[in-house]
Length: 145
Image (cartoon, rainbow, N blue to C red; front, side):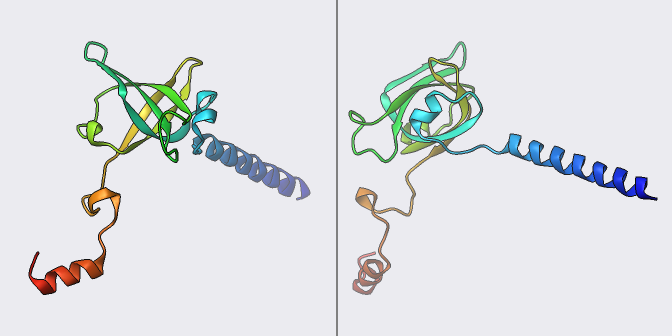
């Protein structure tokens, strides 16, 4: 009777450990650009696109570009890295304000497996300000919209 409990407990522990390790392998963490340059496992990084460094090779379906820190004021002083992405370029890539990349570094460049393009919201006003409901209501009352 005691052996059944020991074996049952051991089986449960093995499955819990196996499930926890499988879960940890599938989680992908957000890192900074500096950490992404050195990443040996798959990570996520967000950055602004440096459109001066965009090159697309149609023969290889290879998109090369650079990203820099999304929180930086200017790209000149920000941390940046070279990115390589194989696949179909999103149609709104050239309108993007920033990009989220999933991939890992191969030492020289960050090889992105997936790319999520973030474009300006159609609900933003000029100068990246969000629309103010009070200003909207005032304009509606005046009949200017």
